[in-house]
Image: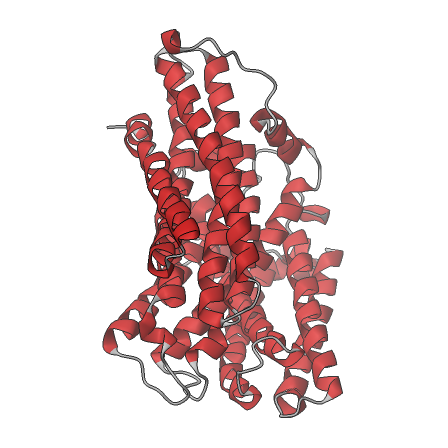
Length: 305
Length: 164
């Protein structure tokens, strides 16, 4: 099995999973069911996290297929541009879904607006994802369609050349990536509270800072994607990069746990967390440092480039 | 310049530059330096955000318990930073971004002392908030300058080696 196969294997998960999550969200939104809504938001966040590795394996698949004379490079480029647009909207949907989950733990006033935004975002994302899947299918089965690569709105090739050619682009993106990393440290501190440091602070009080970490995550996913688009070969050929993707996925699950689980949410000032919550918190810290580890050592561990 | 060259060629310098080990060599030291940075700036950010007024339900005095994380970060990053400086002495000492970074760090650490002694009090004094904003801002300057050290001056090698 190679990465192209992995891409073909994985690529149906987000489309199907997203459809399920969105369907549940729509039913919950109009049927006003809180429990169903909570579950649908969790699914949408998980699907968003899963899409990082899928996008990345797509780029690896492209590398393998470009040598194949049977496939059209134009169709691949069109699929890639469509994927980038869908990915961008999926990220926005994922952030909105997480934010709605966070708001329900904080009893804030403006949650309805988040849900309305999520309604629009999720429908748009679904259309864009379906389009991406269709265009991806055309690569191997050109007989199903005739839609040629029209000028895409988000053009992968021109983004890549901007990242590489503009003198300060890479340095500025790196700086922002480090700042995002520092903001993500808030996740470690929230996990430390579950482990018992600052026990006099109730968990919900500290959890209130978590959106700052998510802003850091957003900064890093944008800058990280720009690095990836700019110099894809440095990453698709590097095992450390795939480890980093896996660790991000699992660290994301840790953040989701902090936001939705009742275990830490009920910790009042002075309370000790249960063993399971502590194990999950400790693994969250391990995963966060793991992401930093793979990211920092990425240029040194993968020697293929 | 002679002194800088001698530093680079000293036992420590040649070890850092010459080591082929990932962990006991340049990459490992960079990793420790980055972890130190997140402990320093990350913990300062958490304390700073609380003092500025986010997460008002958190008792501000409890934030003092996070200060040891800052000192741990300071030890990790200054030890690793010294090793990196010895190994790259001739290029770093002439790099203007290096001096910006050092000044920003010195000021940021000063604000941490200030925050620990008078910022973490309820009610939060006015200059406590000022210190918190300054602290976060100074870390941003330090990180930016630190990153730029890899891209300006003698250390400049753009092109194939864009990953750093």
